[in-house]
Image (cartoon, rainbow, N blue to C red; front, side, top):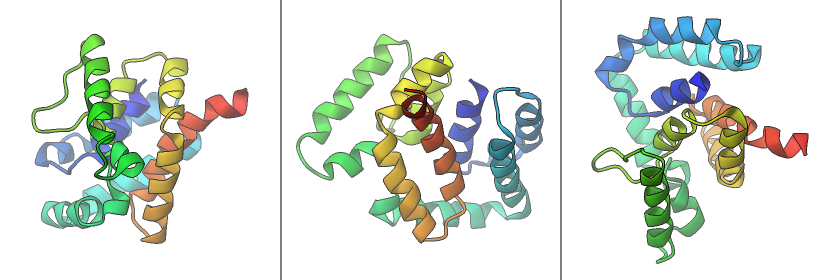
Length: 172
């Protein structure tokens, strides 16, 4: 589903090419029937922030938010295992799962990086994506709460991902 791909782009490091695709993101989000009004609004506000902010400031904000504060890390297994030995096998298993599905992690990127996970779930049917995200719901809730506490602009995007994963539990 396109929503996951859009969120993957918005939650990734703000590379210069992202700015050249913001209008395209707006158009896709406006036309996609599977995206709710709330989701459109959150994405629209975030895209407006990206449009109005200098790239260097966006890069600084991203690094200060995700790289300097471990509680905000977008590497999901960090929140489950920290630096414990159990993290390594979890990363290997996730990487093998991706390979089995025909997806390769970007060079230098761990397979538990949320934008990479969102790229993966964008290739799945919605119910499969919800099942996959439901497994990460507790971690997503913690990260979103930490970002809200810090008044981060990224918090609403994390809540969108979290809510997609929770839909399955609510429907059960």
